[in-house]
Length: 90
Image 1 (cartoon, rainbow, N blue to C red):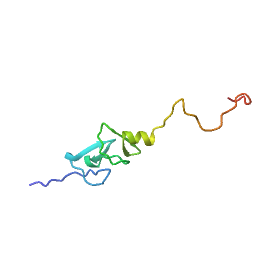
Image 2: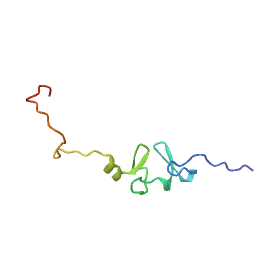
Image 3: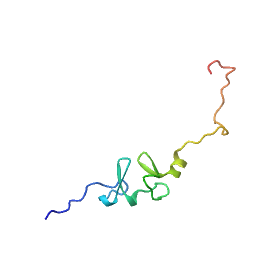
Image 4: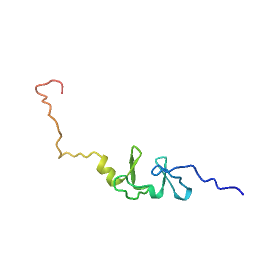
């Protein structure tokens, strides 16, 4: 009788063996379904609602909050404005 060899694939979050019934692949990395969580809030993620940055998983709201740049025309910019009249380099 042949013995079940299992799998050698390890979860990126917990480093434990991942079996086929509990396997989830995102960004070419393997996770347990229960380990596929937002790094910031620990909320459970789905393939349709996650983002990642440098291999770290986030829910979309926290990814946007932590990494997206915001900008609009009504916000001022920091720094000293150039005076183009006195300089001919503008």
